[in-house]
Amino acid sequence: MKNVKEFMWPLIGLAAVAVSGWLLYRELTTTSLYEIGERLVEIPPHRYALAFASTLVAYAALAWYDRIALLHLGVRHISWLFVSITSFTTYALSHNIGASVFSGALVRYRAYTSKGLSAPQVAVLVALCSFTFALGTALLLGAVLVYEPELLSRVADRIPAVLSNATTARVVGIALLAAAAVYIVGSLLHLKPVKIRGFLIAYPRPNVMGRQIIAAPLELLGAAGIIYFALPEAGNPGFLIVLGAFLAAFSLALASHAPGGLGVLELIFVAMMPDVDKAAVVAALLVFRLFYLVLPLLIAILVVLLFERARLASAWSQRMPTSIPPIPSPPPS
Image 1 (tube, rainbow, N blue to C red):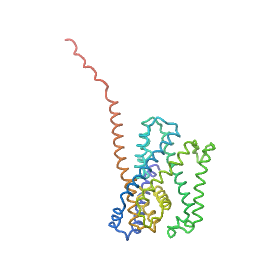
Image 2: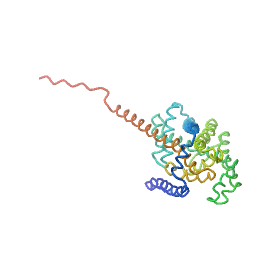
Image 3: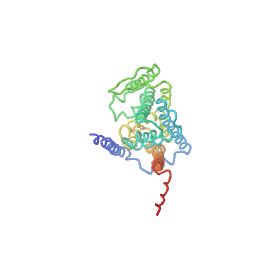
Image 4: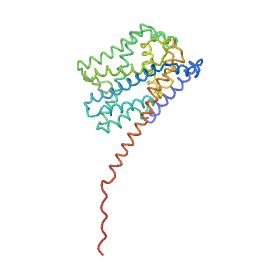
């Protein structure tokens, strides 16, 4: 059964890529590669610079995720530089690989156990980082749906009418904000841990929670900013709509377990931008993939190779004898 589960998620991810790719192809049948290339050239240099700056903001906030989790664990001896490199490598790999044992958890385990953390501590760290992301998504998506309840009407012809209704969207937004508020109040009031299906969920200290509600939205705002700055000004629906579309597309892309959300992210985001030139939307998504996924992945692979090389060299040096034993003298004749 364990072997079946190991193969199930990669197969689901590949199926999601195949189906989304086919649907995306149908969506873009009137768009040529030449048009997409033109839109990439038309993006002004300063917009590329702003998109790159947004990438730095996003990855800096992701590093803060790890730092917050270490604060929750009471671990203070690990430097910001090591945490930042570990976080960057973790997310660069996990964002691209998808549901894989070689993504986030394994990288963090290899890195943080080398600094003295135990396996249970790393497990708590991974879980808290994942929850921080979920908290940020709930806060931002809830706020967008309350302020822009017509967001889902952009895909009214693709989803049930009840879901595209502005009242329903606002209710969902309020529910998301209420769920986040329960967590915040629970932390402030030091409520007792909640037990769900055998898992004990403890509210973090207020100083940890306060950092979470800043870091998580900051990361998502930075990631959405990459696409926003790469989109043309003509037909641009505004940052809030772009943010809402990104949150929906990115969350579903992660849930699909497709490597890098390939196809899923593009399909949903293109569908939610009906007023923007499709070639321009695809060009903006390519900029997002380049800055947020591809370039970080290349750097992360190099970091992993250097880290493992250093660990191997250290292990090998410890196995070598510290001194050469003296050569025994021949017995007297």
